[in-house]
Structure formats: C-alpha cells, structure tokens
Image (cartoon, rainbow, N blue to C red; front, side, top):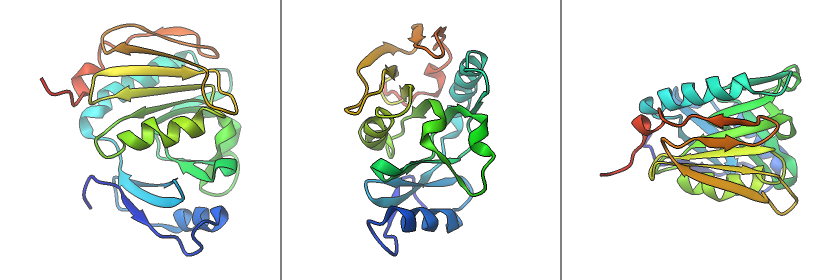
Length: 198
C-alpha cells in the first residue's frame, strides 16, 4: 500500500453502524489504520518513524498534566463520534480510562480530553478539516502538529459550531496548553521530525 490513504466503499454506504462494524472486521496490514472520514472508510499509514520522538516528547508532557483518571496513549484505537458519523484513530490521545473497560474495538469520542494529530502529506487535509470540525464539537483540546510547516496549533473551547479559541506557534516556541491540562508545552524537540523543506 502507498502512503496515500485509500477509501473503501462499505456494504451499506451511509449507514454509520454498518460502516463501523466493517472497520472493526478489517484486517489492516501492519503499520496501517482504518478510520471513518466523510462517509468513507479510509485506510492510511500509521505515523512515520521520524515522528516517534515528537510523539514521545508530547506524550510525556501531556501525560504529566492529564486530568485524574485519564491515560495518554499513541495506540491506534478508534474513537467514534456518532452524531457526526465519524470514527478516528488519533496519533496521540488522552482519554478517560473507563472508556477502555467496554467490549469491542472502538471507544466513545466523548471520553477524550485531548487529541493530537501529526500531519503528513496524505493526512493533512483530514487533520485540518474533517477532524478539526468533529473534534471541535466534543474534545476539550486538539493539538495539530503541522509537520510540513513546522508549527503547532492548540484549539480549545469546543462548541456546537467548533472550537472558539486557537493559538499557533513555530516549533521551538513554548505553547500554552489550555485547561484541563494548563501547562506550557516545550516544542523544541518537534522540529527534528518535521518534513519542512529548507
């Protein structure tokens, strides 16, 4: 499979429950994940190797400030947003641990307190458009590490129309992560994984 995401038509296209069951049954190749984006099942590569250091650094920092009972992970779990008929596997997430006590292969998106996506050429549009719109109605904090331009944006204060607030800084500049985390994120090690052309 190429780095470019591949869309798969689900048997009952447009029926979220059927599509979700199809995603759960998919045997995606090692290193790939399946998500429900814009009414289609999209299979794409998991993060690049050089994204490991930024993801580990980000995870250690947000985990230290996570709300009580919440866990920070980079595992490819699927979180569902039934009103939006979406299912995303974030690059990094912080979620209430009780969300993982259920049976099945997906968790409720309402359990998330923070999501972070590291953009790639193949996922950039979904991270900035579809995921921003969906997360912006439910998830308290969304971080977009734009690896193509070397910037990180924090979105917060979700509403029925999307996030009300945002801040963007270049890698190497401290970023204030809003409550419920409420700390200054050190982004100095993110630049090493960036795809920025000089």
